[in-house]
Image (cartoon, rainbow, N blue to C red; front, top):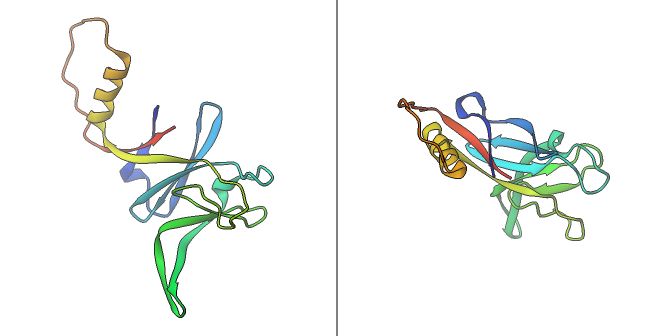
Length: 141
């Protein structure tokens, strides 16, 4: 199911939104031009994970060589545990995962058409052409 989070032009890089979907809180993050979403619950002791610090993952292919990975990490603000924001995988191998969600950018017109298909539009009525041209951040939950 898709949930519109925010217009893209109102969702600046380096910011986050916490949305409630089906009784769950989900943190949606814009890191540069990338979007990530994770459940706002640390599996360790239930802390507000989406309030944690976000930083790039550093990888090393050989001694003395380091580079920034394509993914970002989030750190629990309560106890400092870390997770990959794209996959939900823990930084420490024995820690539990967190739930991550797909996030995309859709044109407003595409959102409108998708909702019409999902609802099936069983009734016919006089309609008027409506255009929605902005881009929106959409959470798949």
